[in-house]
Amino acid sequence: MTSPILDQDGKPFEAEKAILSEQVSRAYTTGVRNPRPASVASVLTPLKLTALLRSVIDSNDPEQYMILAEEMEERDLHYAAQLRTRKLVVASIMPTVEAVSDSPADVVMADRVRAILHQDAMPDLFFDLLDGLGKGIGVSEILWNTNKSPWTPSAYKWVDPRYLRPDQDTLQEILLISEADPTGAPLEPYKFIVHTPRSKSGSVWRNGLARLVAVMYMLKSYTLRDWWSFAEVFGIPIRIGKYGPNATPDDIATLINAIGKIASDAGAAIPDSMKMELIESGAAKGGDTLFENMARWCDEQISKAVLGQTMTSDNGSSNSQAQVHDEVRMDIAKWDARQLEATINDQLVKPYIILNWGVQEHYPRVRIRIEEPEDVQAFVEAATPLIDRGFKISVKQVYDKFGLKPPEEGEEVLVAKDSLTPVYPANETALNRSTKPVAMNRTQINVDTDIDDMTDDAMDDWVEVGGDEFMNPILKAAESVSSFEEFQALLPELQKNLTAEQFTEQLARMMFQSRALGDVNDG
Image 1 (tube, rainbow, N blue to C red):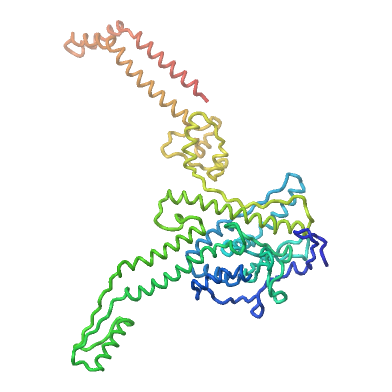
Image 2 (cartoon, helix red, strand yellow):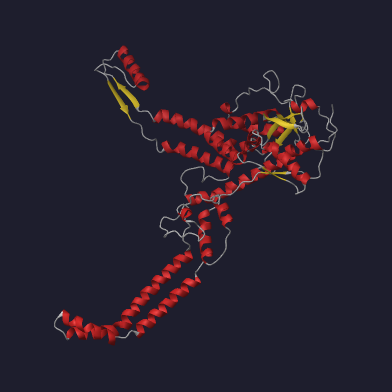
């Protein structure tokens, strides 16, 4: 059965239905797609690396380069870690789907796409497609389930890029080799997802990070090899054996055998007439740090190539430097996400819709958003003065900013440790008050402070205004008597003569201010 649907180039879709559900890129040990490649990195030399990189374009044979790119991820721990980090930043994100419009038809179409985007296989698909970051091209084969409607992807299979070739004429079209076509045949439409991330402008086959890192990998491999050779020579003490003039050949052989035993077994037996010395070797003029610095320098260049920076991946950097360079890494991650979502929209979303519902004027859009980390401390420091000045900020927006949700009714909430006695809403019952405290607000705290200030001022004024009016007659009465009983007898008369007009007036004024302050802040 042949489908009348058009492919992505507008040509009739001639693929058989069975092809969509079969894995046509499977490798066999007896075929041209051999799953057991020979090693390239183990015999890498400058001349061989040069020929290997040139063969991709000059000979239309990227197989050796693809083998090297994979072996570099297996052999170099630093490169593998950096490249894996860059992949996982994007591959671990849950994609979202946006409808073209709010019309029922567009919403339904977006829901259909959302169903296949939330499959368990999607993270693996993203990770396999991001294999193109290192090799320049990442390809996955779609296995469609055509037994029921709608046709949906049942699995995604990674395609080894060693089986891919550029076409002979333009070097732009991607071909897949097979027994039927050893030089390669065009990929079946709607069957493959081809991701070609761009780290620079130019040919896909010269765009992988592995091509950029290959020289550093080779130099580092030489450095490590020389480093271990250096350690074998200068890291082990020199063993010197001494024998006397009357030593026989058997004695000399015994001494030589003892020297070898010390090197391998750390112990040996020799006659009393012989001597053995172990001379500690020096650092050979800084050679102990030379190779480490060379290897570290190669790692730094690899970090720059993969992540665009070194501060967040290597030691010795300050926190502020790491934060600055994190922005560069975020830019790269956003670029990777945008390219991947473009590939998914064009080579998965559109084929899924076209195969089931035909060509549409518009298609839902898959989004892979990378959220930048936000400095919530800076937000609090900037918002607090604004709130103090009456600036209104949505409580929901603050909860969203911190990634929190409002507390449920009756739920226990946190309050400041040094807060004053909790204040409860007027409509709260006595039972609820024990479980749902409401923190005292800033206005109420300011009212209490104002009352304290008014009290202090009033007491100061009372001492100053009432001193002569009250104390002088009392002091004179005390000086005129010779006993407490006589002073006590004068008190009723003093009470009739003492006046408190100024004190009464001041007290009334302070009471009026207190009442006015309470009325202003009521509620």
